[in-house]
Length: 296
Image 1: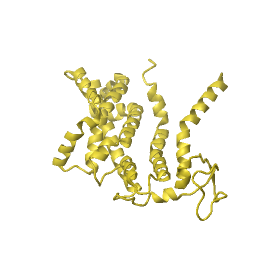
Image 2 (image 1 turned 135 degrees about the horizontal axis):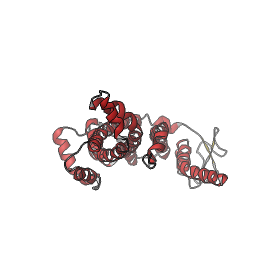
Image 3 (image 1 turned 60 degrees about the horizontal axis):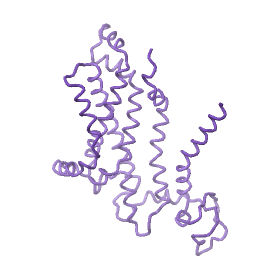
Image 4 (image 1 turned 90 degrees about the vertical axis):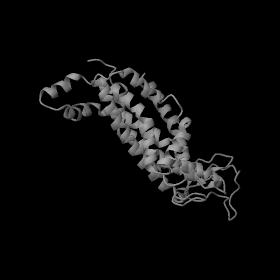
């Protein structure tokens, strides 16, 4: 049965990585090869036979294509109608994503600790109210947020998107972290208090080390949410703090048509930090998915 399990995992791995592999191949193509009616998936270092000064027909039947890094080079250029290059948009995504994730996890952990360890009047009602903020689609409040941000001068700013993403991710962070903190035995904390620790010292030296698995899981979900968010990033910014999803939307107005190799190259770079971050915290993720399922 072990070979069957390995075969299933290998098949799933191929299916899961196929879109990334196709994006990688597309990012190495010229535009004509990317929009060809016949799939071309064999990269070569030299120009395929038949390519003359006028270029090969777009609809020829060859499966090879001349690999080029031109799409990656063009990411440093400012496309028509934009004010910044792809890498500047990527920098905005990194700053906004990391700050909003850090704030969401920090505030969510503090709030979850309060609900888990103290008697809060109407705790169930408060927790349901926090969860209910996830029921409504975020874009349903875009107009009030737009008006409020215009009055506060937060339009087209990093701070505006950081605060907004933190507010929307906070409910998820509170509920996830409360489940993890509830599973940490109170005896650990009580022993620290008996030894002379203050409540704050017990929180930082006892609770946080035990809750790091939950914090890693929560951080992954919050980062993915803010990293991929498009609606608010596009609506609340005409310039300044535009993120990568908004950059891709702007490419649709290119006079020469959608530059698919450039889109593939940018998307591949955009996905890489999430994949890397998830890989680094994979042990915490695996433990977090089964945390609390086995009672000691």
